[in-house]
Image 1 (cartoon, helix red, strand yellow):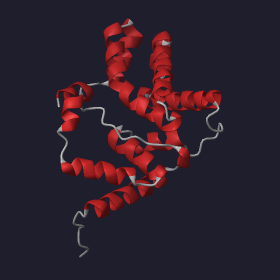
Image 2 (cartoon, rainbow, N blue to C red):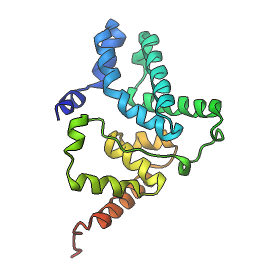
Image 3 (cartoon, rainbow, N blue to C red):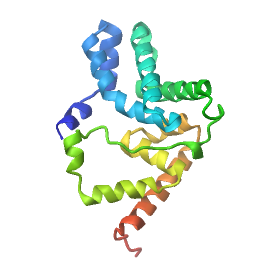
Length: 194
């Protein structure tokens, strides 16, 4: 997985500093490519349209460049981007009049797409990966969204709580439910209580 190293080496805080301090276009492009797939998946969960999701994320990332002089005022850029994309997607959803402006979490479609796989690598996924994806798709909507944000997008619990406006305890409970259901679907051996 050649793309893995590039994504994992993406130090958002360092890129943020380079963009803000030096107007570094190379750092901006690296940031763009590092965060775009996850942000697009997040927007897609709200909009149900890849094209609209791409527009929202592009708009948010263009704003980052426009506001580069004040970029260091943002304490957690990754969370800021996710919240901005959520807000932009909800606004776009309202403009498109596909659903009401208060889209509930049950209305969200979550597409679990790995940001780290190339098309040729996707073909080589094992049977276990396919089973995991199927099991994740069968999770309840809120459970699936929290699982995706925590496990795929690697957001911290407190960041997910802030993003979804729920408690950290709810996130913990939902992830426990998700992992239990995944274990059941995959018939994974459970640890025996002593």
